[in-house]
Length: 109
Image 1 (cartoon, rainbow, N blue to C red):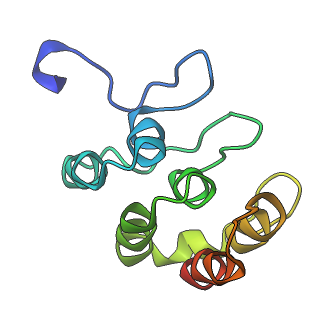
Image 2 (image 1 turned 90 degrees about the vertical axis):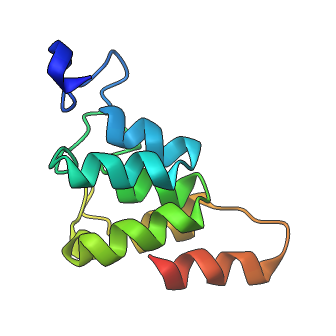
């Protein structure tokens, strides 16, 4: 795609880049490909999904969460415009059926 002039860091009408959409869809392969192409360091302008990590956490995409944390550990400490860390966003937004699920995502982020 990049060879055809597609900007892999461009934000769409929702304020998200391909890395955010891959994380939301749970495509660890897509996230990995964008990381390997050097096209993963994109901040979103979406009101909720400020980073690919936050998207993955809120979408409950554990393989993407683990991948993003392993590649970009500092993202776990990057606050959004409301001064919330990804773990705080997850704790406030995720409402799992099983209380054990919540700990999985809070611990992962």
